[in-house]
Amino acid sequence: MSQPTEDPRVVALRRAFDQTFAEPRSEATRALVDFLAIRIHGDPLAIRLEEVSLVLSSPTVVRAPSRAEAFLGLAGLRGEVIPIFSLATLLGYPEGSSEGWLVVARDQEPVGFAFAELEGHQRVEQSAIRTARESESRSEASTEVADGRPVIALHRLLARIRARDTRPDHSKGAMKT
Image 1: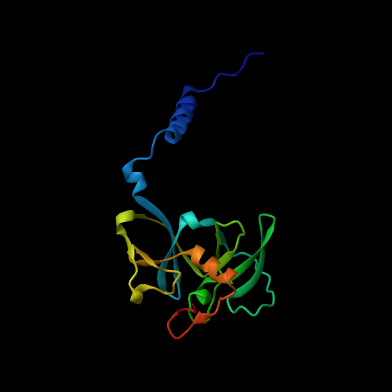
Image 2: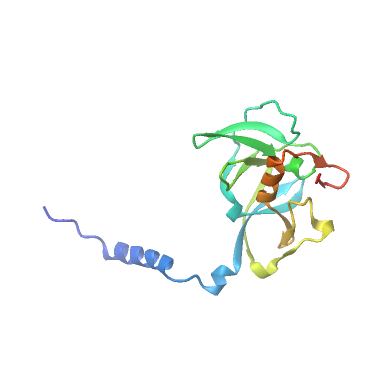
């Protein structure tokens, strides 16, 4: 029995696709950074996509008791049970809805952060990212500003959670240090 012949267009597309991985990235590609654009209590914020492993709409979170004010409960995702925290509470916002969206941090031990409003994907030139002034920062978790949005560093929030300090500092709008 003879082998079916592949369409030459499919072969050419596959070769072009494979070649993109063999060539070094162009300067233009390296100069762009991808973000998840979100809003919390109307404030525009961003999360670097390189820190995200998963984004979900309306996840089921099972409430569980905890002394951590920001802890919402547990969710079953991809065969794992992971803790879910309110991003708004961790950043010192007043209580409000954290339901609607979930971002899971890219880490050895997955942790989810719930928030209410997703705006979408944003690609920003590296040159448009700058160090945040104190007045622009919601907490020590946001030390950069990208295209006018404070950037929330999930790795910093994970460090706070692992240090068992998830209390917001309501006097300054930031978490306690």
